[in-house]
Image (cartoon, rainbow, N blue to C red):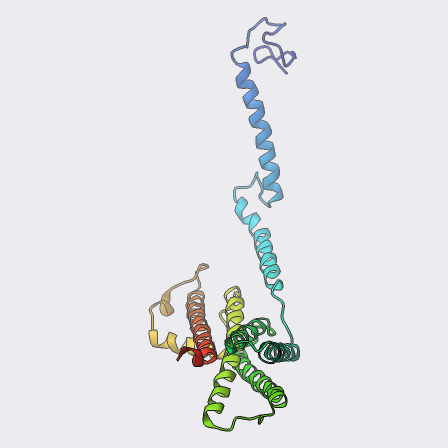
Length: 279
């Protein structure tokens, strides 16, 4: 290092200069700290440069924004890809086969209580409904129709199995029997629909667009028009655009509507599936 007094080269361990005979034992710890601080500053500048900041610029944040946005988009895409989807034919076939197999094992093979079958018939459609195709394709009403179709086909297959084993008619012979069929079918259909709605709500919540299912959007816009809030007239979004505030409010209403539909559908599925055990 150089002597702080005469600027001559001396050893780092020296406590006195051999040229000017000055003693700098007192200032040596300060010099060491300054040297360590210089190393830390260089390390921080290197990290800032890697993160997209320019240490010599007056506006380092702006230089880093594009990189941060790109990383956020990549993370969102990775999260979305972790939720797989099943095509309609595979979902229909798998749900049907699992329900019929569960009915055969629980009722025919092990002669267990009917409540086990009803619980399975709520959970299985819900799971397959959650993995049923792209949740943002706006065909949420069609999902309910699909769930009811699965219920009809599955119950018919179960009835055929019971008819062959117990030698009884395939279809019910009285109104009470048809009512049980209807309740069981509603339990399966709405269980499947609940899974679809839950997935739809989760995917829509992470989507930048406020657009959701046509059914949810129609109900949400109806509620929005009835509210007539002042936010729609002049409130601005984060980037200063009034339309952003409107989209944000609409998306919040849509999320609420989607949640209410999911809760209501789940309640219908559970009640109709377990109605005969509740009364």
